[in-house]
Amino acid sequence: MKEMLEADSEQRMEEYLGLRWYEQPQEEERVDSRNGCYERDDATPRRIIRFRVRRTRFRSFVPRMLRAFDRRAPEVGELIRQAFLRGIPTRAVGRVVAMVTGEAISAQTVSRLTRVLDKQVRAFQEAPLEDD
Image (cartoon, rainbow, N blue to C red; front, side, top):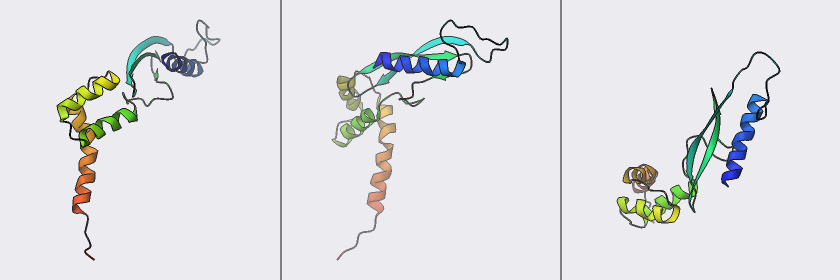
């Protein structure tokens, strides 16, 4: 998975620049140039994957499979919500998720991810009941 994500990032950068590794531009005017990479972690349901994201002076190239600012798979977010719904305390949810994925999650992260549930509970509580 790591190699696939890194290859996709490299390919996106090559398409943007129109140059492969060590190729020189034909024109004198260069729009952008390579600027190395940075490491990023992404939590999957099984473990954390650390991979390199290629970048130029003006852009970075996150693989197409991932969204730019998401650091965990949607399944991991659902695991956090389900653990909370099962009655596990907010602080303990982080330890439970860390046992499964290897990612340490703070109580604040759990609270932020479960705010969606607060809206759903409020809508359920305020729904009109018809008595037949």
